[in-house]
Length: 421
Image (cartoon, rainbow, N blue to C red; front, side, top):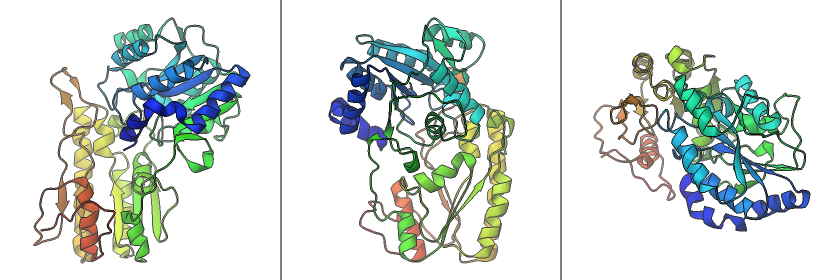
């Protein structure tokens, strides 16, 4: 939704009041604009066309622009970064814009409190503390020659870049919040990291987190009568449970960008394992999560429990098919335990579904490379209730189905229909 929203607005973004204030501040102080974002055409966390449009419009106002380019290789092909950087460079060549640093998203976009990764990216951006290369393509080529793919390229300085100065401004250009919060927190001195570069102004594409108090280009959209809201309105209790990597998905994202819990909403965070990549521990924290989940099902306190098993997505992103098999087997074992408890408790339905594919496609035959990105394959909708007939449908039909199971009325705002026939 954010992708389409920005696509429609980006060509007239110069009329945005917060962007105008940002530009005016930079012009008055003769500062440089530092744009940080994922140079990728994946469209999951950002889009390189948004970043080039912003850079060009700001540069055309007489402001020097430098780009801190994060590389993908996770929601895209492993080695698509070189092509994306070349396309991006071509799109900004008419203006005073250059790439200042390059970093794999593993460092710049961590969301699992691996602060040492975020700090390494930040120190390159803020203080030019990193190895130096003549240009971004030669850096990427060297990494490819050493079998290092886009996501894992260590932060590096390009050319003679010297860091952030007090008169400069920062523009954080990813539209998805979860993988920008740590970097934004360090920039603002809110992460316990003492050596922070001074800057004049800051702006983000979207609101990342309310208490960061960063001005943004696109305000949060308001959604009425979400599933969580309906549960609250009927004075029922609900539980959200996931390990670290997917905690935001069952809370912030599931609640349509709402940070605070609903009344009667309990949240449980299970720490994800501290490994470099999850193919090293494909079980992740699934069994620890299941242990807590089983207790909560036994309690019979909740009308709705939303749980996310991270393994198929997070291990799927590694491109390691052997690890992916172990990840799926682990989740299968966990679901067997959950189903057993659901049957034991009674009057309870287990629904298994997904919002996108990944682990079912682990190899890209066309390019002869591991496949690490999401897919557009149809996803399952499995329900444990007997004597129910289901139809095929779409993701927006799931909430109405849950409401029907709970005997609650579907609000007008929900455009889908129950999958129960």
